[in-house]
Image 1 (cartoon, rainbow, N blue to C red):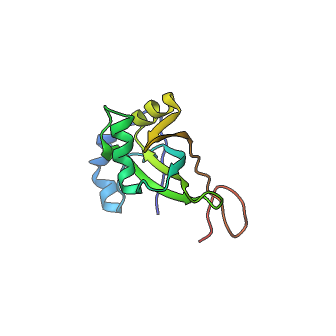
Image 2 (cartoon, rainbow, N blue to C red; image 1 turned 90 degrees about the vertical axis):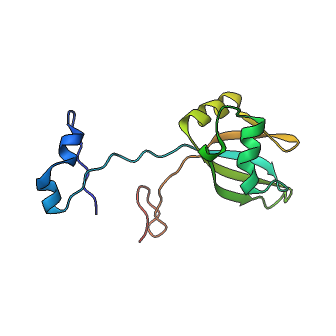
Length: 133
């Protein structure tokens, strides 16, 4: 369980070193930032997802290292088995470079890129903002 406290001015180092909070069993941490996710459309099926990050960095992003890009999902297309859609997670700097181009060169073709938006949805009550547990 976690408790979130929002303050306009706070000395985070002073809170982390507080013995009273440690005695109660509380720890202080920074807010986790989600990394942007991008959807790459019509990636050729002959490109393996593990080789995709190297392909993107070598052909499109010279200044971004391959460890800043991570393959999250691979969606197989029902109608066209030769292509698939892939969701990647990137650093904010890599996202800015990719979105300024709007296309990535992968294999012998170019693939459209767009933002992938995460929406929490409960599969039990079909409402947004939470999940069924």
